Structures are given as C-alpha cells and as structure tokens.
Length: 212
Image (tube, rainbow, N blue to C red; front, side):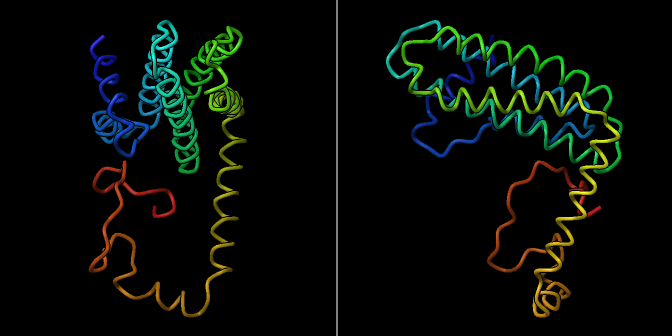
C-alpha cells in the first residue's frame, strides 16, 4: 500500500512543522475534482485511508503511537467536516447530490462502526486520545444523519442559512464599510499591495457560492 507508506512519512514529520489534515498530493487531487459527487467520493477515500492507518497504529504497541493516533483521528474528523462543507456548497448551488449522498451515508455508517469498535476495544492508551476519538464518532454520526436527510429540505435549509448570514453581515456594516467595499482594491479577487492571497481549493475561474 504505497499511500500508507507515504502517509506514514508525512505523519512522522508532522511534529516538527505545522500540520494540515491533507497531504500536498491530496490537496492537488481535490483541486482537480470539480464535480461535487466525485469530490465527495474522493474525500471518502481519504477518510477510509485514515481509518486504515489508524488500525495499523493500533496493532503495534510502539512508543509515540498515541500521538500518531491522536493526529490521525483529528485529520479524519477534518475530512468528514469537509464532506459536509462540500455537500452544503453544492446544495446551496442547487446541484444534484443524490449519488454522492447515497455513498456518503453508506460509507460513513461503516466508518462509524469502525470507530465505535475501536472505542469498545479500550486500548490501554485510550485516555491519551479519547477526546478526539469521541469527537470523530460524534462528527461522523452527525454527518451521516445529514447525508440521510431529504436533499430538497436540506438544500432549503442551507439557502435560508446563507441568506440569514448575508443579511446579518450587511446589518453590521457601517457606512464606512459599505463605502470601502466599493473601492476597486476591495473587490473580490483583487489583492492589495502587501497582502497575500490565502490558499484555495478552487481552481481558476471557480468561485465560492456567495460569489456566484
């Protein structure tokens, strides 16, 4: 399993630097996948890989494994949260997610069972990563419930929430804020001198839903 060997190297060096929950190669894969159902499938692949790595760590009682298990659980949880973000983004744009949500629901049910099995096995170092394990279980359970909801109803909720947040943001704007937003340098996509554009998973030309 080449991906496992690559990830183990990535995990081993994580302590010496700021970690991201995806490897550089995985970020590139996400950027290449534009269709939301396919993007969901890709994230599910990453989540399965993290659980496989987790099970490998649990098989071997080696020094330092608790920290590796802890970080792997955190990365897994961020991936599940990304699945929900992709889903909400697609539903907010009124895209068809029927295929993606069906696979998410069935896969997350399997992964939830795996996580609960780990918890029930009560590893001797469980207390060192019990909190993040419980968080992974709760996040997966919540995501599974979302994926099983009626898509039309969930889409309506997402759109309504986006409208509410936009309304609240506008209500907080001062006259100075509104005037500043009209200046060319503050328009979306324009970078001021001295500012750095944050990294994005969107490809050139792809915009977040609030800029559609």
